Length: 323
Image (cartoon, one colour):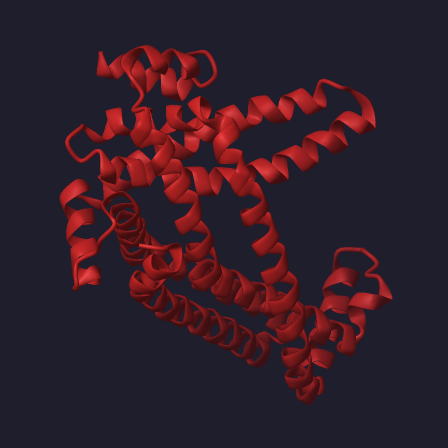
């Protein structure tokens, strides 16, 4: 199966993830609007109400992600992994994916334990690489470290998904051992797998620029019709700054600028949804294919685990528990 065929057959997970994201977005907007409106009418402190509404919305969105979105993401990774390793997928991809997730991770806690370990391992190793930039010293070292850190964080997200795919592939092994193997695969085949960087960052940059620019313009036009609301928000910002004895730059007290900022924030949020839902899975399909091909050809042995024992305390601890 080609990457395009795999992507199309697993698109159902993306669509359902989008529906969850839209529910979260609707709840966020509703909570913020209700919080602002209620507090503005009760004691003329709409800005505080806006913040309270945002916090409530974030908590609700986190719960949705924890108990529902994780299953969709994991099932999609499981089916992508199955497609690139077996060159086929069942007719009912959705229910098969959910079944595999429930079979591999009998509880939500089991899933987050494994993914938490995976992220911890790669973050610790990422910190070591970032530290190499800081070791150069001075502003140059800090700048290099910052760039390295940003690149690593993006790579870590893909590596974690690949490692999770390996845990699904190695269903005959305990999840903890498969996790160790998945982490080792990258470091045994680093040069081969780094060829994914062009695909990851190129498509990411293109989608960011195109989507954010388009939606910023659309929402700026929409928000321009609510000048009174943004004028009220600007007044709230000035009042809050005066109470704290601070001075707010004029840019942030101009209603037009506030509507532009709001439009840009919404655009970035929408980009995050669209990119994560539709663009990233396509990129991930190719990344997982390269990763799985490298891993299947040379499955890590016990002796290979020593590669990471000295680099990640989390990995070393997990490795000891396997003994």
